[in-house]
Image (cartoon, rainbow, N blue to C red; front, side):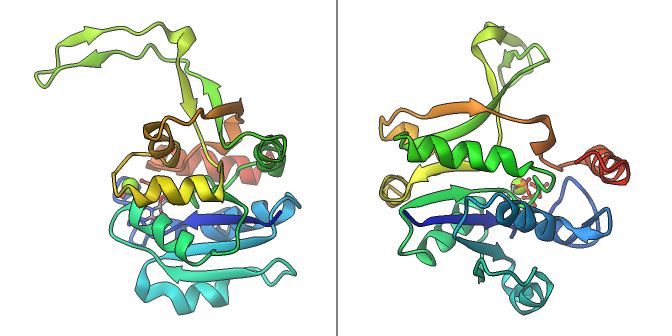
Length: 223
Ligand code: CTP
Ligand code: MG
């Protein structure tokens, strides 16, 4: 069955605060987007990659990405991440399984990508990498007062790639609702989302501190 990886890379990277869209910021000498795509290809579990970037960067992205036997397509993303993923879905009509993988998770180990695809092939309809949370998480109200402390043992931090039966993800996107992650849309349909063990190296490069960490890890050959 055809596995297509959609790579949202159209965000501006406001929290990182560099002078270009985040996916084009270099880590260890290569753009994050290039590293993320190389990881997907290296997994051997992906048949095709679709990258969604800011519209004005489509042409230069085509020149930037690795030449490989695995086809890599570049399409314009949208204003919100959801819009970018929708654009990628439209560009992948023949997918049986879809992975959605943030360009900002540039150091994701190929073995994690394969773990997600294997769970789909074993019959799961929706799969997310999950790790235990190390901080205590509290809910708060609008004034900042704590309203609750959920039991940490029942909480997980969720990463990408998130994997889906393609028809299911299309149905989730057809509802037109917004969610902070793709699995959240699937949950709204009432479908069970399965977790697989995540990997600390799949952390999302969001802040300047994350970028320091990522560059240090690459310099040490730790990825
Ligand atoms: N993304 C996207 N299209 C958008 C917004 C985000 O494709 N309209 C992508 C980003 O490029 C990134 C991934 O979604 O690879 C995760 O988003 P995030 O880490 O929030 O990246 P940015 O939106 O770029 O960062 P910020 O929120 O700090 O501006
Ligand atoms: Mg964002």
